[in-house]
Length: 118
Image (cartoon, rainbow, N blue to C red; front, side):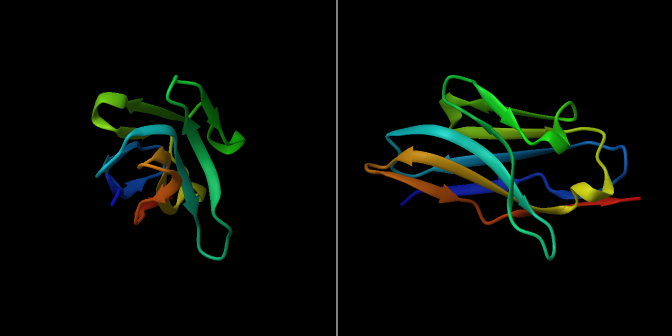
């Protein structure tokens, strides 16, 4: 069984920074894409950023230039560095991974709350 465990959420003032981490564990053969989604109250879950095993990244327009996604393939861990945080970034952030374990499927973390105060 594969688990994705997130950490690093919390309360921060506008303009501040946070770093989220997500570690995958279990019987994993390989991990393809890893990413972060978020869901604010009353809104649909949306993609924030994702990164392939080769390091190619994609970002939502709303976070470009402020957030950076990275990963450590040796540790099966993905990070989200969030700078210049805004109140509209407040949401539950979910880690996501497409992986082989042994067949291909998509795993989700339990979510971590990020709250940005104005």
